[in-house]
Image (cartoon, rainbow over all chains, first blue to last red; front, side, top):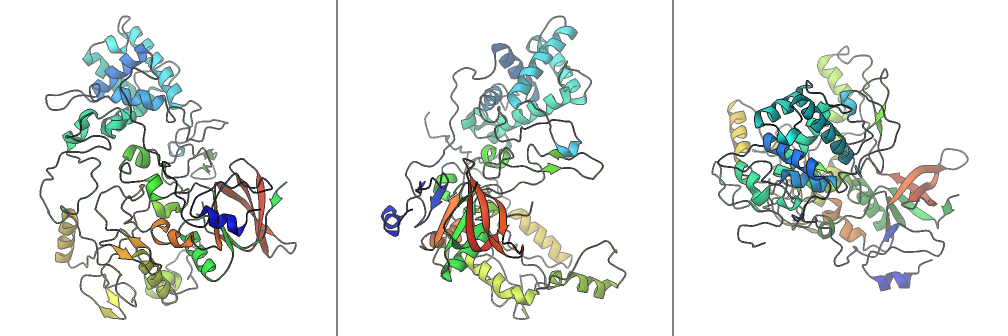
Length: 242
Length: 316
């Protein structure tokens, strides 16, 4: 049992107390707000060091796919150059890819749309399966060429077909895959650049979003005026060198 | 077999808004109080500091401040003819998790109910007749009135430093506020927040049509404020990372920014995090609660005896 003296001694620390009867492997907090230096949890910055999850073929297919979802134009780089495929790769290699936060216990059965996704496959497994099926389906339709190798018009044909259900994938629902990769591409495009996409804040520049800025008190009264300051990221600023 | 712990006067289940307020009241009254929270401890500097609070992927899309379905979920169906299936990823609703609960990442919209809301059945039948409410509708009068609660609304707004423009103080209607609100005993503790361009356009148009626009009462404070407990909040900077997010400015009213710094210093109070209460225990008459049983994150079971279990958790 802990005593008053010990608590006072500990002051305002958060402690995981082990009471004599092995009671607590919880965190017991008393005597003040917990404070321990270095206990924050900043995001891990993605670094450009190859593919962590995708095979070279998968990476090629995904880079091609994101570049059709967000094609480059004279003003804004496309999905590939802004790093959307890198974003997806790093996400799939991490907790998101493993569905760590989702309820993944069985049994599994399909339900109504309102009941949401009921797949036993993690996001990472879904990509692996769907991309293999995608390349197979393309090779069947386009004379032996995988998705990355067909023309842009043909790629667009495939993507539209996935979206409307007319382009079938063997062993995987094409419409689900379309929704999944579209969502992940969008997230990669618009998320903070630390996650590997939105390179140089290109997406934020495109839509005029100031990014991680946090103080608009000087602007709240400036009605109907364009906000002129450039975007800032958690780890990115015009004047910071990498 | 649950290990029995030393008795406390009160055990509070869930350390969000209601749990924090109750814990404060009870410890101030001299009771020995333990709060059990299934989620982790959360605070500004450790969980959403200004260096990385602005992360939409993490907080808005991946819901990191919420209960994760992997820890606990529910089943769902729209009607009895369907098979209920697990909610594997939150959609329409999601539950807070951790110290602060939903109060940590709410939008801090701090309306009061109208007086007629408390007497809904009487009000509607008086206004629209006995036949107005369908048989199957379960609307009732609450059993407490707006007047019963007014002092407590006032307490909460002054705890939070709520920013707003009063419309009715002791019966006197004031310009710029909601003229239809229940009478309040005094104005808001801080002035209404400044409004953006879209808001002002809407207000002007509404006024011209004869409506009575008023600024939304806000727990995102228009100016720095020290509450009656001595805890100080900062000024809202209109950052936009509000709902779903913790506030890095200490300018959003939450248990963390209004009560916990004082509560944690009270020697009568102890919080145990990552402890999930499984049931409330009753004595052999079945009419009196004797405490709760909970598990920690290792799955070990404990019985916490207490005269006063207080359930301060969402109902889902």
